[in-house]
Length: 343
View (cartoon, rainbow, N blue to C red):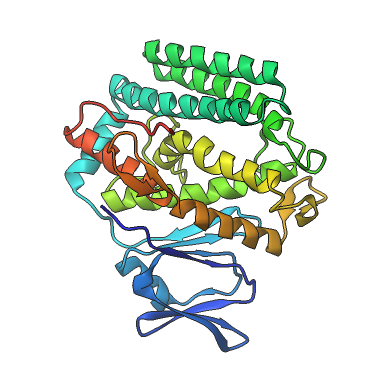
């Protein structure tokens, strides 16, 4: 089993990263502020402006250390990767399956079953733990809708139908999402999911965390030898990691959504840490971003029992496990792709 490594998040705008022997050094004003051994790192995520030296880029690519560049707002800019990893036969099989509608629908169906079940689990958890302070009727109605959607997904045979069911389930889930915001309701009012750009504080927090999850999923798929851009549920578009977005669907609710709700409900982030621009876009400040990144790393270290492997693994390795299981299905070792069901 792959081990969960450390992630280096560079949030200082003026920082520059370089390679010194087997170490990554973070420099500011030509002075070294941080020095870390490369062998301890799994990924580097940069929010800085000056950038990274070519030597460090090459070292990260050679050692398969994920190197990702984001805007301070969390918007994705680029990833640095080395040579393509994995068996060419696996990618050829992935391409064949992506062109085969019944095969694509089978994988998409499994993904959606995981997504909808996990969304319902988040709602059921809120009903169990906070029945005295939430709109029980609204949450129970949403839960029953999602339960019925699971049956509809199992019966669906076309990708078009599955995509329609996914959209309906997501709308129902986010329609009651505000009910699970128990504290700071005025600062984190949530009416609907908005992206590119996020138009309120909660959407800004969700979008930032979804970007981090995307980075993790792309890296996991590349590690097992799959093409992150060739998906099944999401339509392929140039530059879009469709397969990463596919597998993220079942992980959004138990990883990102629950973390975002915890950060707000425990008041680890506050409304004062967000700013609305003239364009309507909402951005988080540096201190809030650092707080979120610390919480993200702690959540990745949490150990859970994987429902299919029956092994205890860190949450941060779930993307890798699901990518590995999908690759095994494509090779013919598994009859179907087993989605991640949060317990």
